[in-house]
Length: 91
Image (cartoon, rainbow, N blue to C red; front, side, top):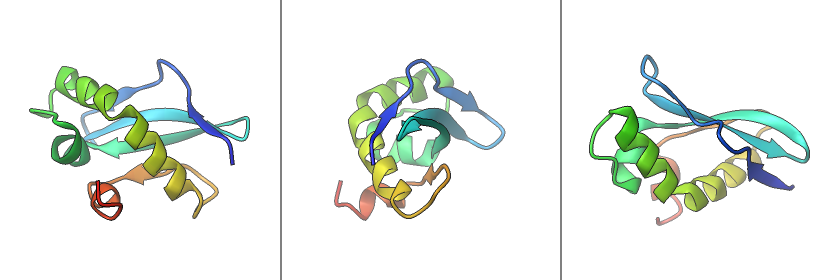
């Protein structure tokens, strides 16, 4: 499976407390997300403010993509990465 981020697709959804992003999986776009909690717990987001979350997302970009790829091995659609996705891998 070939998966990579589509640039400039990260958006904050305050109502669900998630950062949404698009990845391309084998040439097809797939919508995914990471929770604010995961960004705070594992990537140093200091608050649920969008600027802090964007910085944390950029710091964790490679780990987020790796966790997303792992999760996508188990599903056909998009995934939502929660904090536990990173604890389970020891990161």
